[in-house]
Length: 336
Picture (cartoon, rainbow, N blue to C red):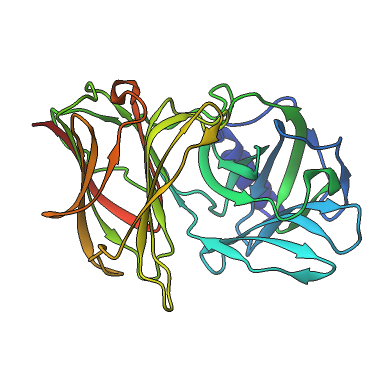
């Protein structure tokens, strides 16, 4: 069997294992601009392609009217083991964001596999899903109205794409989750806790509920957040009775915790609790959220680091969402 024959056979076998083929996508050329209709909030782009055995990296770019401007550069680097997101303005790259290619089902970009990429335009950011799972968020740095073309570069084959509109993200008809995690008082969750993570709360959330989050702060943390929210959607924005956002700033500023809630289409007045974060980069922690009669109290181990008065009924909470610079070991729940 020739090299070309074996390569074609490998691609055929990979396609058999690909469960996210989109029949409405059309073939597109690599390294050639693909015109897009005007992008707006709710616009979405689906891209699929085959990552061959010799692939080192590829990129999906949303390019703009002005030469040298790229609103979104999404660049899996298989040779380096991470994914880059960035924007180019007037021919110069801005500060890049990087992350691991790990997802709830393992590494999402692997050689000799097909990949399904969904880019959704939300109110203030691109929401990106890979193989049916939300993967990352990239906040807009250039206006959506400036974007004119999709451009695929790098080592990718059998590239296909289409543009559409979605009114919910993740859309369950496109983003078919590989598994659903449900947290109850019966037993803790210890597997499949890759961040970002969305977990159904299967026991009633009420006064007396205790939520335990055991994990480790990453070595160079910027921030992470814990949402107690109603529903799993990222768009439209869910109602969030409690948004807990520890922020770790280097330099003269002390770390602090932001607490807030989202209702009626907007964030309410935020509260900041400063100078009480004893956790350290790279260290294990136990974060406890207690639902009390008047509000939530937040504990780091046996030390209370903040409280937040109820602005919405805690009984509407049915989902836990955690994202940011943490590694999770265990999630558990109990009643006082």
